[in-house]
Image (tube, rainbow, N blue to C red; front, side, top):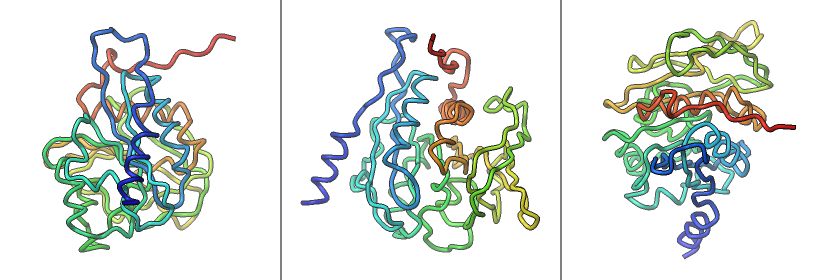
Length: 267
């Protein structure tokens, strides 16, 4: 009963909270996106709203947020209670942190719609989720994200270098250095993945690591970035541009008609 009640409350409080910008044509249907958030180590109470507002300022999109307030690594988000958890959405943003959920039936339930064409965006700790068998070797979840990674460094600024400057997702973006952030290190970037940027922390023994990439998951477009631990990074206009463009790419809608820079407030 408690679990059903939690699901009802979560969906009621976190429904389609962001309206599409008024600059779009009235007959243009907004993208319907689901943000799945919750788990260990991050301000998931705030970050989905930062993301939703930032992305809605850049493209015609609506969000449902499935927020799990549990702060451990082993609690299942209520949205996954249903076999049809993904129905009605054009794209899923995985922003959860659930490394100790290892049940293969659950993992299969999450991955099944993505195997059959549902685009996805994976943010930060999503890369460290669902460590079922044969972890630490490449797991089914890692095949989805496109990277085998199981550790990160201390929080320090990350120097981001775009390595594929002609790729439409990052074209025109300039290298930048983040505030203190966690640099996730890759055991392997899978052959199905294509790196767009690397990150470097000024630590002698730590190598550069991919921080932005795309993945071909059974023909489904998946965009991932390990950036985004802290709220100030998530709220950074460069980060919001990046995630918006990655999301639109996953839907094959990355063009001038769908992506626009937000208007600056007049003083």
